[in-house]
Length: 552
Image (cartoon, rainbow, N blue to C red):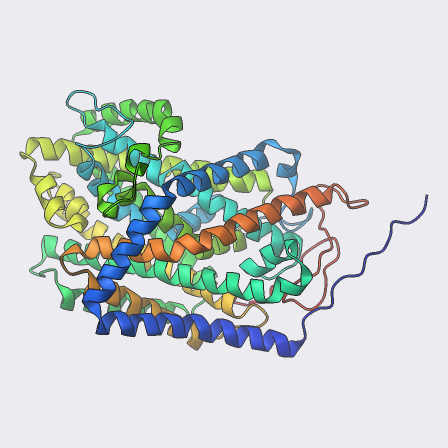
């Protein structure tokens, strides 16, 4: 038998070109974001009008696209689980997990949805109790809002994280590439356009991540202020928001010097413990029988309505151009939440991929989608059911609080819990801070890796990134005025929309890479495939991956 033909790998980029790429990735997104912040602050009214028009344009013409995107993510995750590719081990046959399952779940959950889930777990069921398409509300339960909250923060959202994470994990751990979107994507493109296309993809990833983290920063400032005001004399307002932003940014900047493995792991495990304390307190001291009954009923309703909710595009709103995104139910809910997930994907997925070496693709996908989704549904079921019950008992007092200030939903609910309500208010306020610190810590580290793939970024660069994210969050809060939540949401949508196309290209390349394994002579399911790296220098042979280029 003749030897297989030898193909020549493209030449590796020179050190000079790598340095040039790093300079571009460190300066261009920073300049663009800084310029946008200045323009928005100088021309606030005009900027607010333009931003709202852009959100209306995305909602009016692209709701169907976000629905299809979410279905693609679910489909790819299902394919990995049921196919023989699921036996591929991240890092090669000898790799073993670095973290226990509890630590792994704690870290990925803390980085993924902590702050969003706390913000919306009571507010979303309350806001949707009278208007929940697809799901019919049973008499006296207002279950539609709860079922949609399961949907928005459950398995579909985690599949959207997972499909990005598995692309990055396979590229990094099995092909020895840098933990960047360009290295996970561009080899599907013609060689002559790989470098410029890679830079564009990475810039989009950085900007989407900055806006996604700034959105969460804005929500954290709003909700932490609401939490403090629930048991102190603090009054929510711009000055308090600024103080909160500076405080959280300062703690996170300090955390950047301590390293992800130690600080992030410990804070994530603290988050998990406090979260268990919070939901256990509400379940035991709250309306226990109603919560158990409503969780059982709404879980069944979620299963029944999952497929129609997954395909719901609100076709009636697509008969003509929208005057405002607010005229669309999906524009206020599904489009925004899917965009938030997409904007979070760069740093959440990169972080999940990095801490998951040693797990098979099947174990990885099931662990990232199923377990966190069940945790989300239990959390939302308990908190949301309590909110709905207390709202009925108090003559819609919680609905009135949420209508006045969306961030107050959880705290308004906890105030009604007998005996330990005051303690739970403190726990929830602490969780807002710690969940966001873990998110910003992981996000800042991921951003630094994206911008400095071929060398260690250094702690001061991560501090600068924290400052930039804080500045964007402050800008969104100032620009928002009375509609601050809507404006914060819009920042996420505008960042995520263009980046989603880069993710789709990366997914296609991931599938292509897995299929190419079958064509490689002597390649087993858990071995690596030789492929040139865009930014790395040397190619990697089958076996354990090369050392990480980014460094901690």
